[in-house]
Image 1 (spheres, rainbow, N blue to C red):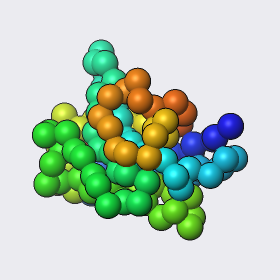
Image 2: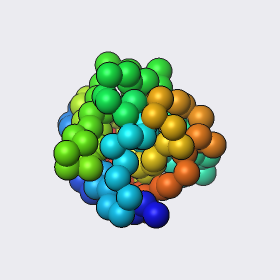
Image 3: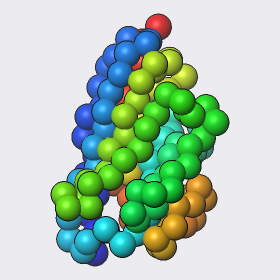
Image 4: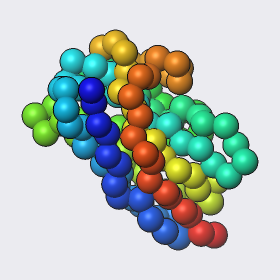
Length: 124
């Protein structure tokens, strides 16, 4: 079993920054890719960013490319999402997820453990 707990969400003005953290406990996630997804009001859950087990490969949604950065610290069992130049359309609940495999993927179905989510609200 793996437990994932997100933190770092909050209310920020447009143009601001936030850093989300995802702390894993239980079974180690160091051998697995990890991802961040988000779900805005009235929208389906969508891919944001993913990172391979080593951190050597990352993927981003086009909507966040150049503004968000995913990183991981396997020694701490933690994954991060640095979010800069935030926009009102980034408002959503952000979820951390563990992949079933070590390579980064963008498909929701590739992930088998999910956190409870952290709310990010960007005001205009």
